[in-house]
Structure formats: structure tokens, C-alpha cells
Length: 318
Image (cartoon, helix red, strand yellow):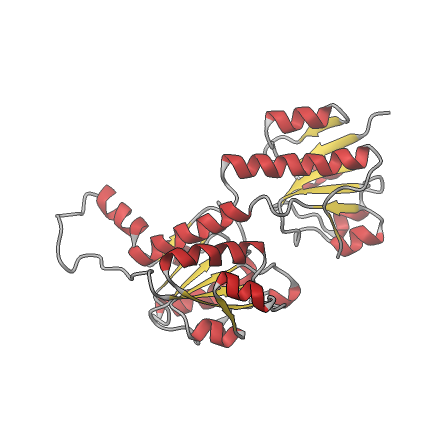
């Protein structure tokens, strides 16, 4: 019998067609419920899920026939990987393919918030602009300033490479220090978290979300930043204590923030939505035609390898 795979979101006609060559594909309708997903998984051995889908222990326990989860994305904190491994369910992800797109968006957000681009766009669209003035809507320069990078994996390194074009001094903190030759090549200096926050004009977050990085940036950490500094998060929302960030912004402890991710997506606190010094993007880190196609291709390749009796190329463990 052909294997059966449940897909929680439409990932494109071509990737789904390739998947259908080897398996019976069930694409869930928009607005599906957890109970509907569990029902479909009763007769399916494979699941292709999205980073916004909660695949917890309760769901896994209710699906005894599930053998592989192909995650459409790099982060997999929404999946109980440890329990999946305990149940001998393979979990895969799509690393590498979204590095450049996410690094590009990081810089788009950093430049936007520092030069008040989105704020100015709103001002013009509202018909409020009365013409050029010497002191109107002044922002902060980026060239020649300092950048702190939290997490120096693929994306962190790509962000550092782009910082060279702005002649920035770059410090980074990471669980593992880079070899000295890599630091020299990237033009970065290793620092602890406090140094990374207190010494720079811009802080960007690129570490994975784990129990250890939950609220890594809270009230104490935000208080260490310069009052003229900006925070950019394109990693995962819960790495930043959202309520602490709101307080820091309201009290002027930092100059602004640019966020692509949130603690309880798609909910974004009203307080953040009302702040002009905050740029808000709807989780666009990997949202390019090229990257999303590459993610779909890799998610399908992980499943294809499994269906053909091979080890998927990107297996993750808890």
C-alpha cells in the first residue's frame, strides 16, 4: 500500500505533486482543528507540518501509526521532539535554505527602525506630511556604528557579513565561540551577553529557542542596553520577554525595536502596535519565493528519502 501523508498547509503545487508520486497526500483545509488533524493521522504514517503547528505529546500519543514528521522550517520548538524520539518517530527540518533571506530581513528591519521608514510611510499615507524640514523625523545612522549579534550560527554569520558593508564594529555572544580564524574572517569579537547588550548601538537576535533561551532578553537585559540602542528579533518571539520590552520602550530605556516574531503569534500586543518607534513584520524571515520553494523542496525530500527506505537528510533529535 502507498503511504499516506497529512500536510497542514499548502506548500505549493509542484512540491505537493512530487510528494504525490510516492504517497497519498491529504491537504488539510484552512482553519483545521487539532481533532481534525488527529483524525486524519489515525490512518497516516507521515506528517508535513508548519512551524506554527503545535505537535505536542498529547497529539503524538493519540497517533500511534505516525512514523515521521517533516517540519517545514528550521525551528522545531513547536514539536515535542524528545517524546517523538522516545516513540521512534523521526523528526526532520529544513536548515540552511533560509539563511540569506532571514539575514536580509534582519537588515531591512534594522535600517527601517533606525531611519523611521515605516513611520514615515504611515505619515505620508495619512496626508500629514507638509514638506521638508531640517529637524523633521530624524533617525540614527547605521554606518560606522556597533552591532551586537546574539547567536552566531548560519544566520548570525550572514548578518555579520553584511555588517562589513556598513563598516560596523561587531561583537557577538554565542553558546560556542567561533574559531579565531572565523572571527578574523567575519571581523567579529566574542563577548558575554552583558557586553553584547551594553556596548552596542544595535542588537540582533539569532539564537534558537530552547528552555535556556526563553526570555533570554528580559527586563534586566534590556536595562543594560543604551537608551539610544535598537533591538531586532527575527529568531523566535519567546526569546524576548514581550511585556518587559513594552515597558522598556514606554519608559525610553531603549530607542526602538523591530520585530518579525512574537510570543503568541499571530497575537501582537496592542501596546506594541501603538508605538511609532517599533517596526512590526508578520513573520517574514523566510518569505521569499526562492526560500519558501527551497524549504518545500527540502521538506518533501526528507519524506521522499523515508518512503524510499533511506535516512532523511535532515533528522533532528531532542
